[in-house]
Image 1 (cartoon, protein in one colour):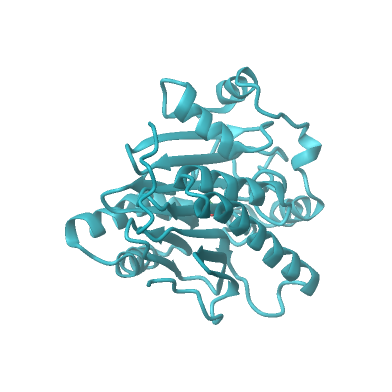
Image 2 (cartoon, helix red, strand yellow):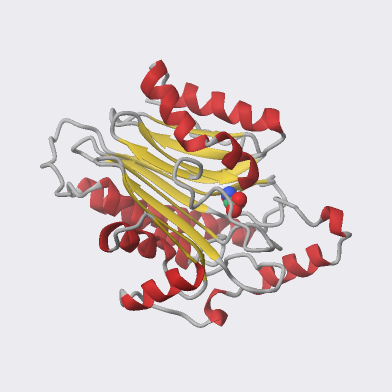
Length: 321
Ligand code: ASP
């Protein structure tokens, strides 16, 4: 769909996350913390360049997510977590709020940037969701950059898998042994929203497990009549609630603000026993972070302002206007 010409009066905004979890002061090495903050800043910069130049929210969220997929600190693209069998199987989804066009992939193994594959599914296939071998084949057919397994594999992720496999079977579902699913939501100067989410999933996932991240309405959703949402956390809970669509529905039908809707749905996730967080932007330029974990890698940018944060007690974590 062709972009509408930007109406310079609308405020653009970009909000990103790099996963939620037990990010507490002292748990993250200083050098890693600096690199993570720098990567979040680069991701904001990539999206900002597009939005400030009158580009689309869709291009901005893809560009921001690609930066985080390329950075090994995050559980997406390079640096994805390992399955129980020691493989990398990545999931991603993207959605355009203008027409609710969407694309998603699950269990892909070789595409350097799964978010671009999700976008290709949206733009170049008659489908919304492709999985595993078929998605890998479509990626090659589309000519997207491919990588050998060694490109994605990071020693720390292997250590996390070894730790998990050393535990009794009943303790092997541990949402804390990951960190770093990535996502971006944006509203552009024309008032259109878009969302993108990309992940390696959960360490030690088995049996072709799929989480919320690539599911339209759970880990990713965008609708110009409401908002754009990207989720991170214990996917099994986000799936059962349909978190991203639920936030949009509260805003669309109940007239709630982005922050109120996000907080209410995250309270539901918590009530079921789930942990994680969401980022939201609305067509009016307002936005929200909401998370029930000690921290969330996150950032927001709008004309003339940029904030990056990790810990729950850092200022700037709520971004409502
Ligand atoms: N939501 C992702 C999943 O369940 C994991 C995460 O966000 O950390 O696959």
